[in-house]
Amino acid sequence: MNFNGEVLAALKKAGVSDASLEAPKNPEFGDLSFACFKLGGNPVEHAKTIAAKIQPSGLISKVVATGPYVNFYINNAKIIETTVMAALKKDFGAGKPKGRALVEHTSINPNASPHVGRARNALLGDSIVRILKFYGYNTETHYFVNDIGKQIAMLVYAVRKNKIKKFTFDEMLNMYIKINADMITNATVEKDVFELLNKLEKGDRKTTAEFQKIVSIAVKGQLSLLNELGIKYDVFDYESSLLKAVELKYALKKLNKKLSKDSEGRRVLDLSEFNLPMKEPVLPITRANGTSLYALRDIAYHIRKAKKVKNGKNVIILGEDHKLEHLQIKSALSLMKIKAPEPVFYSFILLSDGKMSTRKGNVVLLKEFMDEAVEKARQEILKRNAGIKPAELEKIAKAIGYSAIKYAFLKVSPDKNIIFNWEEALNFEGNSAPYILYTAVRAKKILEKIRAAKPKHIRLENPSEIKLVKKMAEFPNIVSVCAEKYVPHVLANYIFELASCFSEFYEKCRVTDEPDADIKNSRALLVKAYLNVITKSAGLLGMSVPEFM
Image (tube, rainbow, N blue to C red; front, side, top):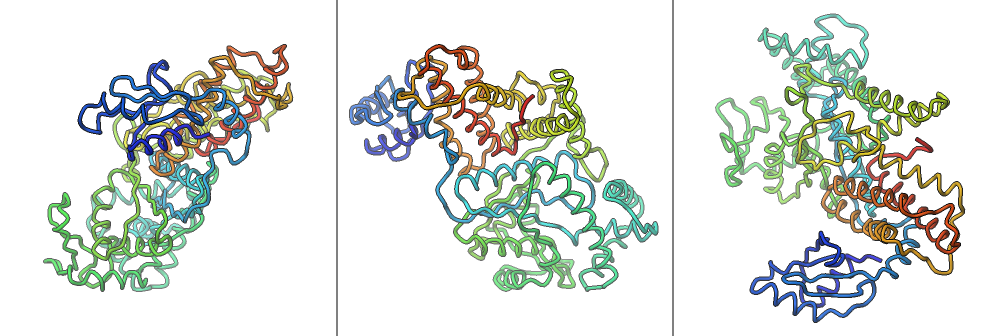
């Protein structure tokens, strides 16, 4: 049923072990093509030789050499029968059980309500987790809580200074912005903040309790928002647990030969052999008093995670501003022969005047963004269903609003910036979540009117039907690519193409009022198969299909 797989296998038998396939722009040149340019020599002669070695079989109906390309044509009758029946199954596209996978994502500093920019990490990580699980990995999602950082100390200082006895999660951002401004104008503030950190590391009970209170309020508030978006975590790793961790002591012992002291008395790690883009090729890992710095705790944390997955997948989602930091940690781990996690870097969601910053306060809060998405979706639904019940309206508005955010974020390659546009995100006719979800709802409505009974032979002959079937057949391969390369945007782009194929089929082919019983039943099965694939694939992006729109 996997046409890509059959073509790759056929090429391998013909002597091409590392082939890259592409879909020809002109359908006259087949369904898949292999370009022979990378083989060296004369690509036209290579194409002729390879094509002559491959005999049509299975899903491959014809192989033709056209210039430097080997073009493969699919057997329509076989792809229709196998794809439609396979796509009706719950496990269509799912991978066989594999090893373990650990994914660390989001890990927002617990100092305030998160802004929209942080949501890209969470949504990207959540989709990768969903895809890996579906692909067969035993996946564990981790959230790293920086509970002993400077940001938390600043809030502790603010609470002490202003004698604040009670405060809410929503009030923390203003507290943080104000104390950050005070720190800029008053040097003693930063000194006092670092003194709080020193007391914390020494185990002062009062200070520890104050830190824990703030972290608890922040983490609960952040998780409440993320849970509303359907994002869940399996393990919470607190940085404070690393202060006296065995992994930290292990790292110091293993890296000892590469350590020296700088002019401030700090222990620094020599990274000169890695040619990293640093002013000085050393990484400070302890203070002069011997207490650990963040870099050393980060190294220890990655050692701990590496132990858990061993030969499995170990993935971390990071903003592009953490690239150098990751290279430093990766280099340190390599000195101990420990494999660093595979990073997925993402660019930023921009305001009109640049990147968001919690310190400066020029942010759009995620909660406000989510509320606006639901409200805008609510207004769009009321235009189409004025008499809808309030409870149903709220449920569907959330499904559409949250899906609109997720799709708008995930359809963009992680290495590209996002400038969010509400009109585009909630457009029922463009490359958007509402458009995709609407096609699924249309499929549901068709199936409410007709029972999808299997005919003796599945008869799908209209070009739009065949086009839809071929697009559905790509789903398992799309899942494989997304799981191995951590690229949910490839899945998002595929879903839009799939939905567009269904819209074309919907416009050109009758279903409920088709007079030919075999064609009617065949099309009903196709609709049912489509609904299964679009629901499943949308779910891998965290999107949910509403009952109606």
